[in-house]
Image 1 (cartoon, one colour):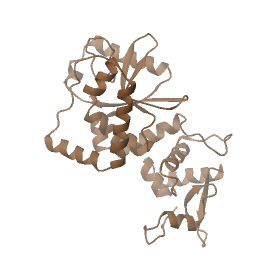
Image 2 (cartoon, rainbow, N blue to C red):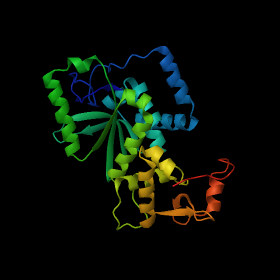
Image 3 (cartoon, one colour):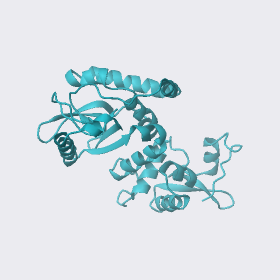
Image 4 (cartoon, rainbow, N blue to C red):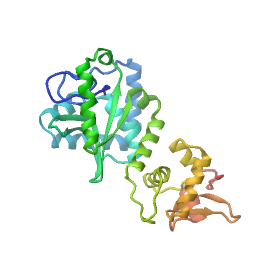
Length: 289
């Protein structure tokens, strides 16, 4: 975690290190010990995440050298780990395409580092940052501010996508951060529809498909889509029905003709839905659209 901004690989401190280079250790947010303990318990609550995070860091250390390796060992801390645990892991469901302390050379030859680069394909390169708020934000010079802005501009011009989350948002508003990430993946083309390829999909439609794919292809209901994407049930229903019309989802219809949810093509039977949701309301999911 670092203060807002961008810095280079040079020896000079550039405020914030949003996309960062060599500098003194970042001035991390001071946290009470009870907050640290709470975070540690949160990290340990999901063994699958703990294993995936450890494997990701080991892989990065093996692949890195020089300044990047130093950053992985010395600068990569609680804020960065919390970003993965509370935002990236719930959305991606895997850390295989996530690269911590990623090194990037910009269009003018400058070398920069970002908290994470998510590169699932040649078509998408997404930079992700967790920014803390500290004293350097107040003390930044005009030269540093200008340098920060220009370096970020160069990365965006070079077709990198970027999302930045504040430490407080990651810790206290993680669901909102997840919603933002889902919409970004949908907007920037992470979703590659299997059906209706010639039909244009909107941002929310792509986000719903991404939610369906990353949730084990579970039944999608209006309530679930609305909750996960931060939209109203009415909006969720509109886009679910649109996806049905475009051939991406199938409505699950009860014996009485009621829509109970949506599934991928070929998976839309009431029996299948009841089996998947066994244990919820007695084996049946009551859904209102």
